[in-house]
Length: 278
Image 1: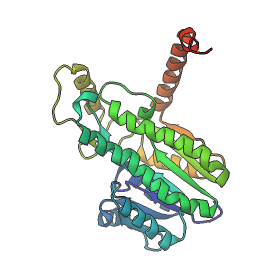
Image 2: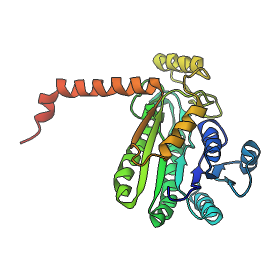
Image 3: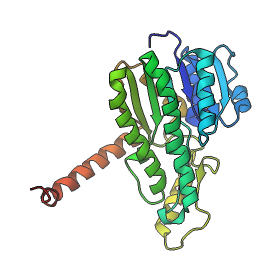
Image 4: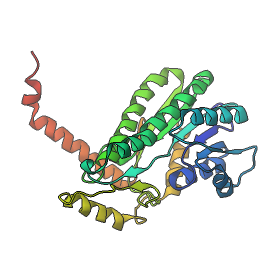
C-alpha cells in the first residue's frame, strides 16, 4: 500500500475471526473501521484511540445502513485500503428442513450483505487505484455433506463472486481473495452464530449424527483465530495475493481430497461428458 497507515474496514468485528482481525490490524499499524450491530460493545472490546479506530453500527440487511457506514469510514479516514467481509452465520440441518424465510435470511447476510458492502466500497478503491477485498468464505465452499448444504451454498457463492471480482478488478489495481478456513476455535457452532431448523424430519438420521459430531467439535477445532488474523495481515501485504487462500491443515487436506475426487469422476465419465459435442 502506498499509504503507510492503511485503512481497514472489517465487518462482524465483535467476536471470533472478526475481532482478532480488528485487533491485529491495529497492532500492525493500520487505522480501523470495525462494524457490528452494537458499536458501543465494539468500542469497549477494542478500546483504541479515536484517531485510529472507528466503531460503526451496521446491519448487513439494510443497504442504506451499509452506505452510511462506508461513507462514515471514508469521511473519517479518507480511504479504505483493505475490506474484510467477515460477518455471517451458519445454518446447520437438512436442506429440506429449513423454510424459505430462514434460507433467504441466511443468503441476505452471508451473500447479499457481503455483496452490498463490496459494491459500496469498490468506488472508493477504484478512485484510489488500489485496494484489497478479503472475503471470508470457508472450506465448506468446496466440501459439503449432511447438515451443511445451505451454509455451503452461501459460501460457494462468496467464493465464485470473489474469483470473478479478482479478474474484473485486477486491471484497476484492486485485489480480491476468498479466504477458506477449516475449523477455527470460535463460537461459530454456538447458537449465537449458528441456526438449526425449528422442525426436524425424523428420516434424516444422518443429519442428526453429523450435528452431534459438530457439537462435540465445538471449541475443539484446530485453528486459532489469532493466527487466522495474522495470516490475513500477511495476505494484505502481498504484492500478488492469491485469489483463494485455504487456512488450516484440515482445509488443505479437504481441498486436496475434493480436487482429486472431482477429477477422478470427470475422467471416469469423460466419454459421456464429451458425447454432447458435434
